[in-house]
Image (cartoon, rainbow, N blue to C red; front, side):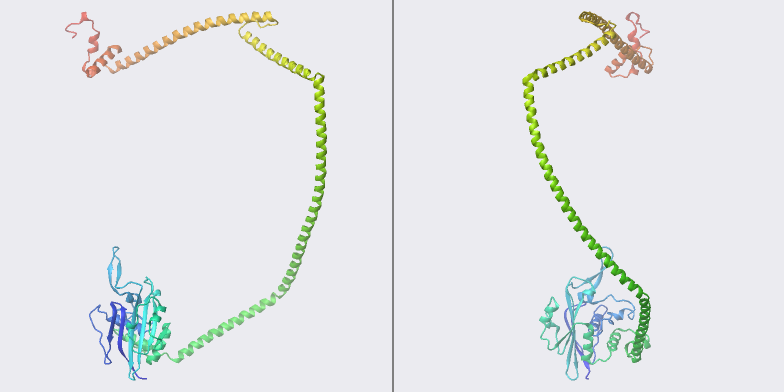
Amino acid sequence: MKKFYLEKFQIYNWGTFSGYHSFNISKLGTVITGQSGAGKSTILDANSALLVPPIKRRYNLASTNDGKKRSDRNDVTYMLGAWSKKGDNNNQERTQFLRTAPNYSVLAQTYKSGDGRTVTLCQLIYLNKKSMALDDVKRVYLIINRDFSIKEIKHFESLKQLKALLPPAKDFRYCDTPTEYFNLLREELGIDSEKALSLLHKAQSAKNLGNIDAFLKDFMIDEPETYDVVRQMSTQFININQTYEHIRSLEKQIELLEEIDGFEKELVNLKLEEKNVTSNRDYRQSFSDLLKREISIRVFSHLETDLTRLNAEIESNRETLAKHEKTLIDLNVEYRSAGGDAIAKLKNTQQDIIDSQQSIKTSLDQFKSALKKCDIPSDITDEQSFAEALVRCRKKERELERVSKSLFKDAGYASVKLEELEEQKENAETDLALMKDSNSMIDGHAARIRNEICEHLGLNVDDLPYAAEYLRIKKVRCNGQVQ
C-alpha cells in the first residue's frame, strides 16, 4: 500500500482560531513556530483530536511535565475559545471565552497517497445547550474519500439537520463511536498497530523521551501473543475455580435437600390438614350464616305475631278508655246537678278560713314576741286585752321617739364639737411644725402671718427674722430700742 501524506489541515472555531482557517502541508515537511501563546499547541491538539483515541489523548502534553500534571485544556475550552483568566470581585480567577454555548467546532485533515487516493478525516464537536460539562459534548465522526472543505458544512442545530445538510452519502461514512472511527481510520490509511497513533501523539509533544525501555515498550513494541495466552489461562483458571466452587455448593445443597426431604413430606401433610381445617371452617361459617338466617326469620315471624296482638290490645284498650271517659263525664254532670258545685265551693271556703287562721296565729305570735321585747304584758285573750296592749305600744313608741330626738341632738352637738377639736388639733400640729422650723419663739398664728407677708412681698422668711415679734408688741410699748 502506498504512503499517505498530510496535504491540508482545516479548522473552524477551535481555540483562539475563530472562524475558518486552512493550512497547506508540504510533503517535505512543515514547521509550526511562533511566540508563546501564538497557538502552536492548539494546532497540535487539533491534530491529536483527529488521530489519537480519547482514552490516550491528552491536550497540551508538552507543557505538563511529560504528562504527569493534569492539563487545563479540554474539548469545551477549545470549542468556546478560552484565551485568558481574569480575577473577579471575590479574587477568584475566571476563564474568559471568545464564544458562548451552544456552539460547534469542525476539524479536518486531507491525506493523499502516491497512487492518487484521497482520504479526508473530519470531526464535528458541538454543544447543543448552554453548558460547560464535558458529558454534554457530542461528536460526529466522518471519513470522506475525496478532498473535502469544511465550508460545505452549513449552520446546524441538531445531528439530524446536519446529516440533511451534508452532500449525498456515497463518499461519506458516518461513525457513531470513537472505536468504529479509529478502526476505519487505520484501515483507510494502512496503519496496522494501534501503538502507531500513540507514538505519533508522544513524538509531537515530547520534550524528552524519558526512560527508553518504557518508551519502546509503551509506543513501539507490540504486546507479545503470550500475554493473550496467559490472560486466557488466567480466565480459564478463574472459570474452573468458579465451577469447582459451584459443584461444592451443589453437593451441600443435595445434602441439605436429603435432610429436609422428610420435612417436605410432613409439610405436605400439614398443608393438607390445614386445607381440611380451612374447608371445615368455611363450611362452619356457611352453616352458621344459614342458621342465623333461619333463627332471624323465626324470631321476626314471632315478633310480627306479637306486634299484631299488641296492636289489637291497644285498639281494644282505646275503646274501653273512651267508654270510661264518657261514663266519667256523665257522672260529673250528675254530681254537679245534685249539688256537687256548692259542696266544692264550701270546701274551698273552709280551706281559705283554715289558711287565714294559721296566718292570724303566726301574726299574733310575732306581736306577743315584740311586746315582750318592749316589756309590755303579752297576755292577750280577747279584743279588750288586744286594745290595751295596742295603747301601751303607742305610748312606748312616743317615749322612744322623744329619747331618739334627744340622742340625735346630743349626737349633733358632739359631732360639731369633735370637728372643732380636730381643727384645733390640726392647727396646733401646724403651729408646732412651724415653730420647729423657725428659730423664733412666736406662736403659729403669728408665724403664718409672717409667711403670708413674705410670700406677698416676694421675700424669704429669713430676711425678716423679727417681723412677727414686732407685730405682737403693743403700740404704746413700741420704742426705739425695740425697733
